[in-house]
Length: 417
View (cartoon, rainbow, N blue to C red):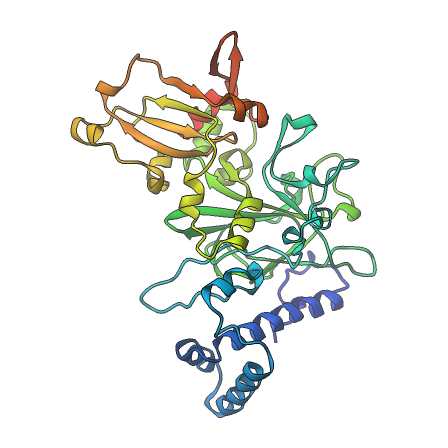
């Protein structure tokens, strides 16, 4: 069994690793037992499990698997309805083969499961100082609803004798390492990791921040599996007020990338300012609410990320006179067909934005469908959504009409750069 102390980079890992090692080994053992239990009656997966062991050990492993299958409640005989009623941590891993990889749902990044227990929200979210648990959620939850928080602040549930967090942080889904920042002084995220995933035709990124240690040997481009330990929870940050040990948490985001050309856009718009993280700067990431992703997965046996994206509540609809920008290519699954534009040619895009600026629907428009010659046209605004979630300030009321606010124009400038 791999020791946790061997997984982490020297100098970053807390000196007291014994409890962390035991906790990580227990998590790994539970996952192994669950996999063996679920696969004992599945011939294909049983073969995959046995192939991992030397031939002279397979007989003993088979006896052990049969014993597990007989003494524990078997998951292989469950109906689909029974499986979907379980917690997400108990849903069996999708079977894979060399021809096709089945997309897997997202998993919680730590062992904290209180998000699924009604009334236990305070055991899951870490609030800001002096506030209640909703301030640790995603959305317009800070400064009286006027400050955006892009992720979930997930509470520590394991500590060492020095009261430091020891929770293993795990990859939320199968993917590859996109970026690692191991210099906490360079970001208010502190030490953080970004993983790239592709689910249901959508390229999405998970971010894990305020880490105390990053897995030894973890590097950009490396493949990771859901549930694989990639770091240890901490409270690193470069903010003046810092994060206390008592508020230790992992800040978790699910993001989309606005523009591959962000470094050039940043240099143009912020000359003389530093950009230490290239295209992985937080300004270039726009998030969706992980809470609703986890809850949707928990209550549905056929969660689909593309459908989830398309079901976002619309804040406004805009028209941009731009025909070729990275979002259209990266998120082609969000582009709706338009026979008129297909026939006459594309002169721009009609874009639906949610309150956080996620372009979740794009419709190509022909010149014959566009009125006016403005670079951006605000077509409609959902006033109820604006009053419910105003913190990004993308649009603003002016008398009896609406207009794009400076932040909305800046977002569209970056999106279409």
